[in-house]
Image 1 (cartoon, protein in one colour):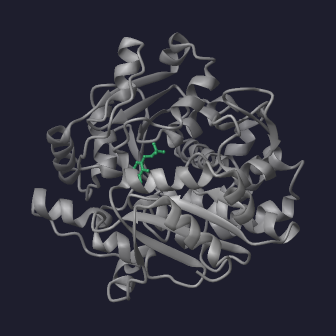
Image 2 (cartoon, helix red, strand yellow):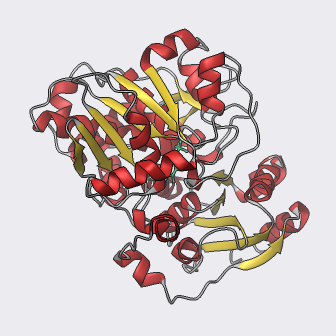
Length: 433
Ligand SMILES: *Cc1c(COP(=O)(O)O)cnc(C)c1O
């Protein structure tokens, strides 16, 4: 696969190169160019998830990886199901949260880890994956990279500002996973990560890469479940192309869906659902893109004020908002609307997670008669048990993954939000942190 930077086509790299660096040297994001186009989608949809996913990835990455290698990664990374659950007549939820850290970020992170593992087998040498997290991303990346040979995972998170349950999911792993509780906010953590990547010498010395959704491996993996949703609908006898409703934060998930459509998957429309962080809906309405600081909401994994993958979506549509509006509908819910949607899901017999609820709430006013819709369900409600308890007086039974970590010791080291000290810390102990 060849990829170019969103900011300049002259920065051209292979997937193997892109997966190891994160952003392009000009500050842009890597996007596949050209994209493969499938003329046999019907046959692809008749295959099972593992065979189809291997086939699709092989068509994308076959010039760099063997089919066997890709089949290995698919088998190991996607060892959990993606059930399609009916919510109401013609509206389904595709549950993406049955992986080890109970959010859809497991999908991208586990594929990224698998591919980095393959790259490391070929070109040995210690690599460091540095990630800032407000919860879900760090947990997924740490879990996926845990015990992968040749990889050291470093996760930064704001001390005391993520739920204890979330912290226990990834700060208790140890071995090649090092977690830093930063005395500061999530933005401080992100600034530290950006500061490390801006240091070319450090980046090269540590072979630094990112597990955030700027990493194209995560996006490619996420195209696969859009095909899966359509395959399940087809198996149910539903022939019309579905509408996909995506709860958006950094817009990586939506970008993956748009890529799947570009590769030939029939999609009637996408709905971008956001919480009160309305930068993209306002952009689509007014034409002006005005990033602003994120507001805290109930769906905190979507609290993003300047979504990084929007640059990729603009690039895909050659910056033509008119074309984009042909394919994309949008809507947003504030916390009051989110709570209403959570009660509606509860009434439908579903324990709601606030992120999925935003999408479910937005769908109600955006669907045409007789349209079939798939809502992407991005997190397990138990991950947000606290929110359900406080706002709805509902108790969520803890799934096994969370019970298992409840009494484990948190291994994080507390550090100040100080870039120079972090850099020294990373450099001075390259093997064992
Ligand atoms: C990250 C996340 C989102 C937002 O996904 P993007 O790809 O960043 O738009 C939505 N829901 C949950 C639970 C998440 O963790």
